[in-house]
Image (tube, rainbow, N blue to C red; front, side, top):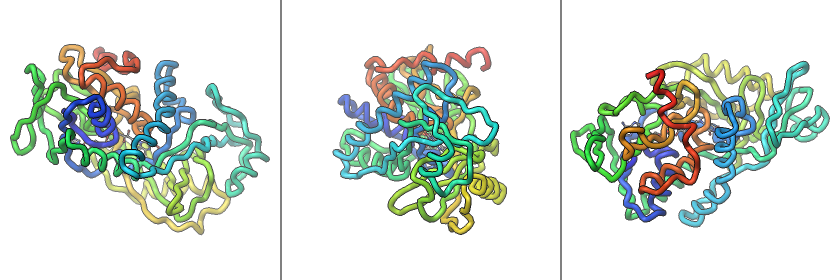
Length: 353
Ligand SMILES: Cc1cc2nc3c(=O)[nH]c(=O)nc-3n(C[C@H](O)[C@H](O)[C@H](O)COP(=O)(O)OP(=O)(O)OC[C@H]3O[C@@H](n4cnc5c(N)ncnc54)[C@H](O)[C@@H]3O)c2cc1C
């Protein structure tokens, strides 16, 4: 049984299903869900400051490198070709700024940068993360939902879960209408809301961090660009440019705001020579599920091994959804995880909670 059907819960469901399990997915639509709100970058290189050590970095790189096979299987099963960009990400460097160069990245000088992206303001160069890129997370989410809905052994229950009971041989979830559902294991994949469930054996240190994005008409770059205090992600069909993102402590408030729009407009001005003519198509916000060290919580509860955590993916949950699916989907059916999750265990917070 999986609580939450964002990209993380759906990836776990797909893996458990592919291993022959019957899956119960419990999900309620909530304003601020992160998976449809994100920008879709697959950026272990550009996000390397968020990834503090080699095991975590290797896990994120492995997550990115699962994407081609993951999307190809999804296409075979649904007929949906999810837009996927492996052009590399360019991280802009201003005059006098130190450039962080994680392994595998390369330096692009000012002239080459101008040739690659003529619409940008002048920068002293860029660090190119050649294997990073982006996926259209909105199309991805709808394809994954469609696949889950079409599988007879995946049952999607449209309801909120208010509490869990993991002291029994078969863990249970108590739904808002007081119905009770149970399964051989119970996975918490409820994004920014993970801490709210009653009956957990320990607190889950996940809180919402709001992010606002705006979308401009036209694809203004060929590459995903990091810089100007934010990032820019081109989308094809229809051609659009996503500009992001704020990082705000605003509780569960998931509306976009005039201050957020102003911050994103400033990013756009700092990146482009002339973006003023590009019309704003939309502006929205979502809630990142954030932990104190900004890394996800993955794996079993140390005392209740039928309870599995798959939450707190923070800024990189789209990147990490397929690899989380592989790892937690295996464990949900009693198999070992194919990936080492020890550095992401909830036990690392034992001192704080
Ligand atoms: C503005 C922004 C930009 C981002 N950009 C990127 C990016 O470029 N790259 C990247 O990798 N990541 C990015 N992220 C992060 C990424 O979107 C998230 O980490 C990821 O989507 C988390 O997925 P999830 O399935 O855990 O959560 P969600 O997508 O929030 O899904 C959780 C689901 O559980 C449901 N739910 C919650 N509580 C309950 C309950 N009690 N009962 C039933 N259902 C419940 C919710 O309604 C929701 O459907 C971004 C996020 C934001 C907000």
